[in-house]
Amino acid sequence: LTGFITIDPGYKNSGSCKSEITFLDGELGILRYRGYSIEDLAEKASFLEVSYLLIFGELPTTAELENFENNIKKHSLVNEEMKNIIDGFPKTAHPMGVLSALTSALTAFNPKAVNVDNEKEMYEAICKTMAKFLVIATWTYRKSMGYPLNYYDNTKGYVENFMQLMFQLPTGPYKASPVVIDALDKLFILHADHEQNCSTSTVRMVGSSHAGLFASISSGVSALWGPLHGGANQAVLEMLEEINKDGGDTDKFLAKAKDKNDPFRLMGFGHRVYKNFDPRAKIIKKAAQEVLETLGVEDPILDIARKLETAALEDEYFKSRNLYPNVDFYSGIIYRALGIPTDMFTVMFAIGRLPGWIAQWKEMRENKEPIGRPRQIYTGHALREFKSNK
Ligand code: SDX
Image (cartoon, rainbow, N blue to C red; front, side, top):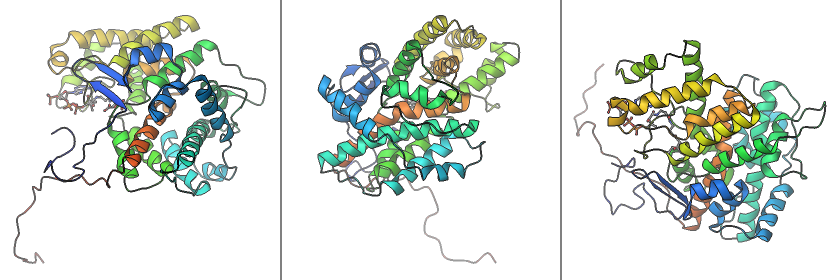
């Protein structure tokens, strides 16, 4: 069974789906967005170019990219009343829970459901989502720090805005270094889409009932939050910090990961599809090295990660199960070097994954797919006569 239970291949919408957006080969470790290799896109394109490619199917011309960015800027103001909602959360609330709630709440201020047959309306809704999601994602951090909430700065680019929305303080201007913006651009590209993973399938499933775009994205945020999925990048850092605190004894933690009586898993290792190296992990590992060197950051956690990876890749248990580092294994090390707090790591994943969710929701709606309704294999009781147990 491939993750969806297909009872009767003829059954309408058995749970699997067709898509033209992302191709991945788990055996060969291949990932392509609309036919372009992830290696090329990470090296040669910007995150907004890749977002446009995923959503509209082709790389944008200069004019199309400019128009896309200008429309995002046009919609970057979030209704001030949204602040009343975020004020209702305790500072200690996990940012992913706040983000999911705020994303759904955007529907209240943009009640008009997207008429998917109207190209202009669809385009506006997409730009609105790209803009407002980025702003509210950073508000979850600002709220947790007790800082004033920032506004999108229309003189800056999309990724640079992320940094100013996060770290701009009233005490003075904030300028993100080009190294940081370049690293984030690459990281967001690497997270942008990944075929029918747990959160994307959730977005398609919720959207298939014709729930709105914001409501569907909000459901994807909740699914991504889980530590087996997007929450793994936070869990990796917590695991590496635990190993570091424990004296860096990676063998002890490898043994725990192999012990069937121990629920501990090596976070950032293994994948539902990749039974080879996750191609994104290779690119992120190289980027982690470059960013730390360029920023002059000495992080013992990076050494622990390398030591753990080497040991696991040589270990029979991991080799025999085709367990390799995945996208989450190194990403947290870069986020930490960029000053992003650990509990915001999965929010970073969500910002990167947003264009993929939008693209997949749009494809499902434009293909007029029926409401999702996977079937099951019934393993319960056969018919039995009623006999009260009272
Ligand atoms: C993401 O689907 C996507 O595309 C997701 C994603 C995306 O971009 O959307 O790529 C992002 O979610 C990446 C994965 C992040 N999660 C983690 O790093 C959490 C740690 N990984 C594991 O929990 C696990 O590997 C999963 C959940 C990712 C995959 O689980 P599978 O494919 O169901 O693997 P499995 O549970 O069937 O494991 C097979 C064997 C089992 O041992 P045996 O029963 O054969 O003895 O491998 C073992 C598992 O116990 N195993 C691990 C392990 N992962 C699997 N043992 C130790 N540590 C691990 N990490």
